[in-house]
Amino acid sequence: MNRHELSTEHADLRAAVEEFARTEVAPVIGDFYERSAFPYDIVAKMGRMGLFGLPFPEEHEGMGGDYFALCLALEELARVDSSVAITLEAGVSLGAMPIHRFGTPEQKKTYLPDLCSGRALGAFGLTEPDGGSDAGATRTTARLENGEWVINGTKSFITNSGTDVTSLVTVTAVTGRRSDGRPEISAILVPARTPGFTLGQKYSKVGWNASDTNELVFEDCRVPEANLVGERGRGYAQFLRILDEGRIAIAALSVGLAQGCVDESVRYAHEREAFGHHIGEYQAIQFKIAEMESRTHTARLAYYDAASRMLAGEPFKKEAAIAKLVASNAAMDNSRDATQVFGGYGFMTDYPVGRFYRDAKILEIGEGTSEVQKMLIARELNLPT
Image (cartoon, rainbow, N blue to C red; front, side):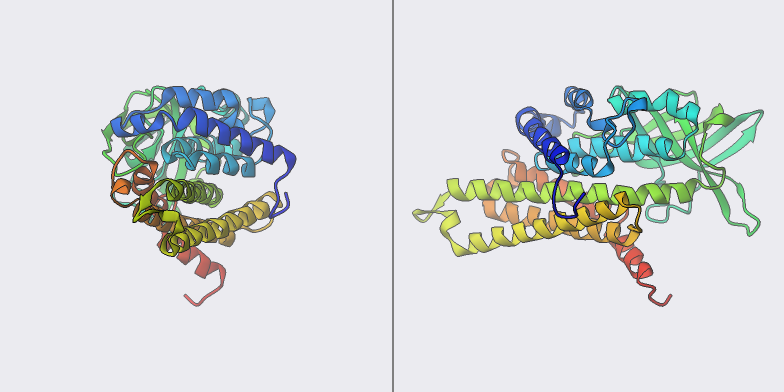
């Protein structure tokens, strides 16, 4: 992949997802959003398109593509709606990718075909009520007893964890202590509906209202010892790798939202009249939309660059953090400006920009806050600590 150009395959994929988002998602998603209802039919159609299998090998019913293909799909979906986009992002990056990267052959054979085809969704339980950005402060525990992991604890803000098609959640848990006294954190796969694994509260959210987000509760939940994902004691390190990749995906989603704000503002500037002129004739509106487009273009180049480094096998941690920081800022700024372009109508639910505004803030928080991204960038620059 050239860092600034799309291959024919990538361009065709982007066009197909753009059409799907415009014709299948846009006309109906507002109703799902206002009812806080999960769009099962839309997700099923995405599965049939192969979107959940984009970066996975064909042997597991994947599409044999790459991570950049996933990012392009996320951008096009988020131009219309972020709830649908985050369902795809979490299902791939957080649900299936840990099994693909670190799972045993048996785990891959058992779970990846349904996850790659979209017949099932996976989730990852990292965040805890008292954890937040300090993911290393895990309190959930898992002890080995008669060949089973016995899990106790609570996880918070877990996407895709409570749908009718959720098949598994991979959770991080303290499985012992290291020689230096620090917790040994491992990742363990818990199938949905395992006894002792229940859903806690379903969150009432500001945005992403058509996506599924739940609290998870584990009370003496027992799963086989073979459900360990990757090496014992490497669960936290493994997930840091997953987060590095996921930040590129969230950056792509953020760019999509930012571009959606531009799209809607340009359209409205041609339609809305004030003081005898279309508002797009006024320089104040022109400059605002021009700045929105500039932010979006810059953020897109940032995630393209991070993705190309990742696919080339080059270090990309810093570039992923930069892309996520720049793109989430662009999404937040563009959603605010788009709401201003629409005036009072921007505050109504009749237009997508109101939904965009509600969805944008979480992009500065999820998968690493903006402050965490700055910490990572500073660390990669070898600044004094």
